[in-house]
Image (tube, rainbow over all chains, first blue to last red; front, side, top):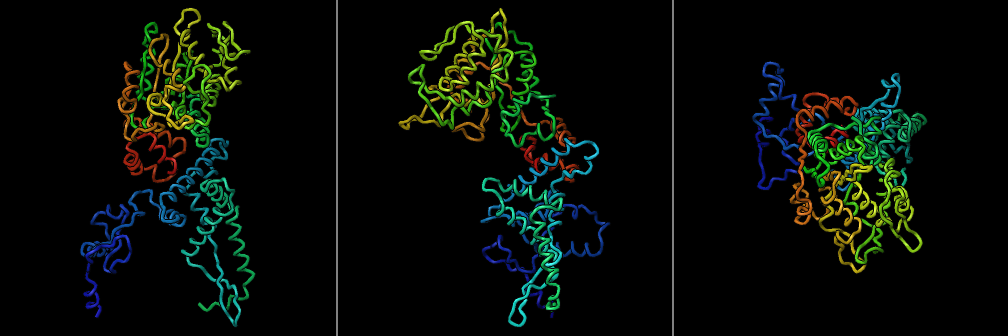
Length: 229
Length: 328
């Protein structure tokens, strides 16, 4: 039965190819952008990898999106952040803001590094990527709240969050914070770099918002048994 | 090698000053600058002035080579006339006053007074030594007598903004007359960045919306007289620049294209100095400098793979490399 179903899923390509949409036939496989995978010599492949390679030589492969590169500087978390900051599909402006933010953070930290005495130099973190990832980690909530209806009333019930949801919430809070609570004349990258540096040292409004969510969840502990999953 | 802080901060934006970030100022010693400096050392200053023109693709380091040469000149005790960007004088001028000296010309008080202020800070010790050889009358009550020091003239120009463009003209004339002189002779270096802005079109308009030609601006008129090689005792170092230029295509970098007919004829004969992109050694040196100053922070950028990628993405262009390394 399985054989006949896969027989139907043969690669039918329509006359007009809509490559930008992701409505590919499930027969198509995902592309592999990382270069290290192709540099492994024949002898060191595990049996699963050999099977995968054989499958890839037979099946068609989807086109890679523009945001994915085989460059060593490719960062999926950063790409996600850029996509979330993007408005009206203008990725150039969003990417520009992020690069300016990274540059600004690095400049501030390097300036501090060069002016600090020898003893303090080891503690100052200059890598903007490390600061970005650590700041995002510090903003991720551990537990979330869901609105559950029981007996006509809605209760805020503490629930566990998946990893994706936590990352999404951290990024969303960071972006809304930088868009709303800034002076009219401060630029986005300025405010974003200040917030990221504050979150790296566990201060700032975003980390405060995470703590408030944790406190709400703790106070509503009694309703935890309303969750049925 | 150290560079003077005033010259660096004139053309860089104040927030992204690398001198402030790295807590030191450094300039890479490159072939075009060395060539210029060797020419300046060996030239004899009795003949009319030699004009050097730095040209190259966008971002290849013409302005930095100019600054290097200007630094050499100032260490040798020359008087330096540095115009950071000639394009600033032919565009975006808020106030355009009709000149009092010449009826058909226009004055630019703000730009002139800014330039005089910078001139005062760069050439402090010359201001009291040089004496004027002519009497200048500004208004019915104000005039500067013969034999007064140059510093007084410059101060007057900075305080009386209305006549600052005419003061600039007077200063340039005095320096031109006295540069080659045997008694108290000093050498004069005229460094102009973006010299192609002096011949071309301006974006300024008169009150009846007709365009202003560059000859009709006092500052441009006086500067053109400086660039002519009818005086002796100094050198003129100029750079072409497409970045600030008006009505020039972005792929143009050769002198013929950027200066136009008129400009080329006035600059002719000149010594062209081509400024190329980084060679392999220069790229290595820049890369190692960034590593040493902890500017390249991304872990992958410090590997061989990352370095090959940087070479590929920037094509060894200095400004593109700088912008790439900024966020890596």
